[in-house]
Amino acid sequence: MQQKIEENIGILGEITAKFYNQSGLSNADRLFNMAVERLRGVIPQIMSFYKLGELVGADEHKNVICNAGFNAITRRMTGDMTYTGEITKALLGTGSGSTTPARTQLFAEVYRNDMASGTDDQNIAYLTAYFTEAECNGTYTEFGNCIDGLASANTGLLWSHITGLNWIKSNTIVLVVSQKYTLRSV
Image 1 (cartoon, rainbow, N blue to C red):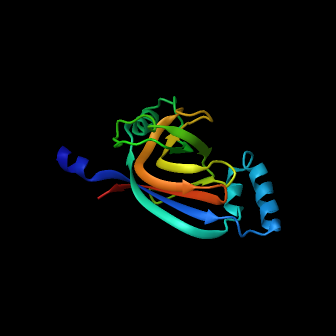
Image 2 (image 1 turned 135 degrees about the vertical axis):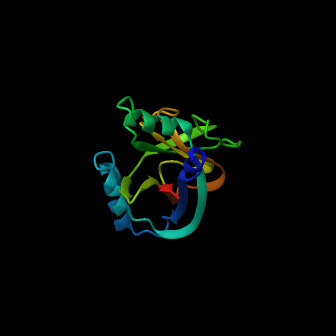
Image 3 (image 1 turned 30 degrees about the vertical axis):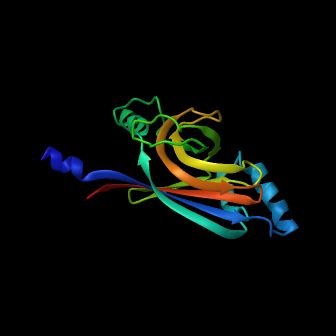
């Protein structure tokens, strides 16, 4: 019976990246976005009002849920309050290699941002992160997120990780990464 139970429990991680071109925004929209960005540190949810521009690409993937994140959750379940269990940061990296649940960091983390929003519904967690046109530029080959991450790289407990991406972000593109984690018993 134990084997059957273990086969029927899981977490499915789904990542959707959307790329929005900002070059066609009006001056009023650009000024509005500047005001939203200034308030971002105080009110992270304000990013949902950010003017995104034209959708120019999307990319969807399943990702690996990491043991370090699971450990934070199980510790909370037993009364150990060392970690909050909250996924606080979205991570971009330029490394390569195969990810496994044993990973504790991205291969080569180069940028991270606070989560802009998070909500839950019926055992599903929905999270969103924004990387605005002025924040970072480059080709990103890995994405992850972490529990209790700080502003500096490689802090926090890695919750999820995906490699083999080809996300190209320039200074005219806003990258919005939606993350969906479904806890299920099938």
